[in-house]
Amino acid sequence: MDRRRYCQVIGSLLAGCALLLAVSDPAQSAAGDPFAALRVTRITAGAPAVAFDLKSLDGGTLHSKELAGKVVILNFWATWCGPCKEEMPSLAKLQAQFDPMQVRVVTVTTDLHPQGIKQFLDHLGIRLTVLFDEQEDVSRAFMVRGLPTTVLIAQDSRTVGRAVGPRAWDGDESVALVRHILKGSR
Image (tube, rainbow, N blue to C red; front, side, top):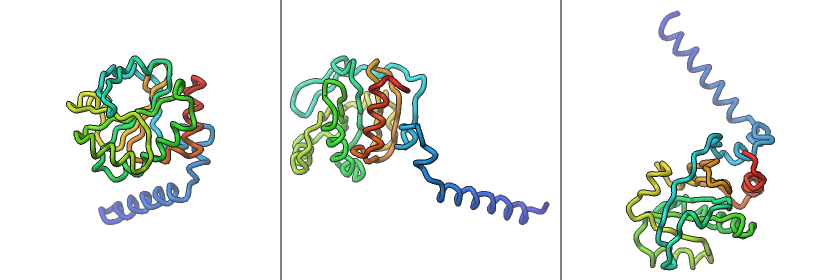
């Protein structure tokens, strides 16, 4: 087969694969898997989440051990990141659907402008925990390479999922995923 014909065959195969992906129903392929329904990468042999002590927007310090026994949605974001700001209201709505003694949405930022963050959150009426990762140690430990990144941590403090990019965290799929984790299912 000559090079030109080979390239045509490969191109046709790639186009066919793209077409299959475009017309496939993600809900159908994710049937029964709440991680796939939300496009969250499942971490099956999750390592214990990295321990941290970070200053919070309210002036206190949050120690990761205070989150033990809860499902934690740990969201890495920044005020300069458009998709991060767009998904923030959905994270707040997700938190509102669960008892904070069972589920905590915690946000982590490397922004160093508390006043701007307060204004942004107040403008939208959002009340979430905001932690400052000034040295980016926690971001590196959780291998954050792009924003927003969200890490899901089960009650046993093991990471069970990871989402890179924005999600509709207030949707039915997100609620189902959190309930799935709460049941201890992975």
